[in-house]
Length: 490
Image (cartoon, rainbow, N blue to C red; front, side, top):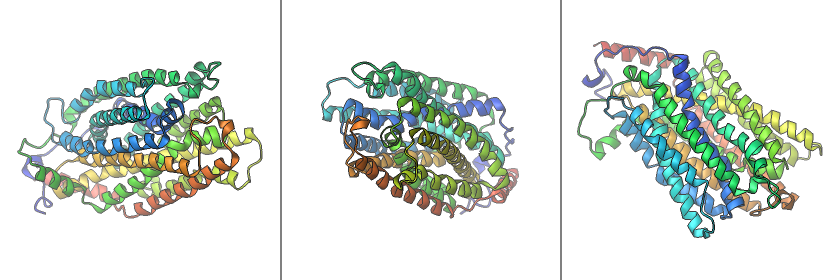
């Protein structure tokens, strides 16, 4: 480990400490996550429902297409992450990727929600597969470099949690705004005599595709332009050098071979499966299990705006008072145990036969629980950012892109496994395709809840157990910063 005692010559010169990000910088950086939030919300909550219940593609084929697309697309994550760590341009390492992705992401996302009519099951499968690969590859060229900006914008332990709070607030708010618009505006607007529930009208999804695509484009451009002035303060790339595949993979392995990172990686993998499962079945539970109307579903999704504020405000407080790991463990346990509680109460016959009471229970409990989950996600992302300096001490390289590419890799690939798991839960429950809520039997709904609850709890608790292996705390992070400062002064 010849570089451990000091940084290599290419980064050994003294560097000015980056100023604390201004409010405008935090807003611009955070607003960029609207693009990923809108895309992720659509894939997680609407895509399976749209193609299986509205377009008529077998739910298992939808899940298979999404999963294959995610696995194929995942190859781009480490490539883009490593590329952006070593990219040379007058606009720095990250911004050329961010600017260049805006149009391709928006255009491909629009096409996904406007499939041609009359396609066979096989043709629909390939349509979803090709566009899912395209969208997720293009979003990688934005999301990975954009996420990697976080550790570069500030090295401060507390400021990183603050910065991530802005990012997660806008990511959740942007994605949720589209769901609210769907249930409170588009679905009612596209309700007709032939299709009384606009949730099953494909024209509503075509309109969604137009609006969502425009919002994705605007978010990417505003974030890239809003952080452009910080380029002069960002870390420079290493000198140009000849890179081989062997060198690239060796450096990536050296960067990621850290016990704390491996703990976060495995925990993120388990959490992504659970999140994919929960998101894919969310509207199934709201629409079928609880029997809520589109308007009630819209009001429940409105609660996520409150959740985003709660989680974003709580994360910096937890960082200052509990530390990131301890705060994540405490908040995570409360959130994940409480998440399926309303379903458990109904399965146990504890809840009264009062639709109004059940609606308010799901609304209030869900709002609080999602807020805690958002807080947990912010703390986890901030924990990942702190590993950048630890890896730099060991390798002498700044590899923010590699770290966050690994995070994006997990979110994409394993979240798809969560969606696939959801399709198996639906199959095990013998859930009918294209069914009106009134046509689904009580026995089917009971099986849906009975299979879902133990599956989701097992995944969440396994994730929390793995996170115990993460070791870096505030004192360790500040010690790493001091060692780096000393090495740069030599």
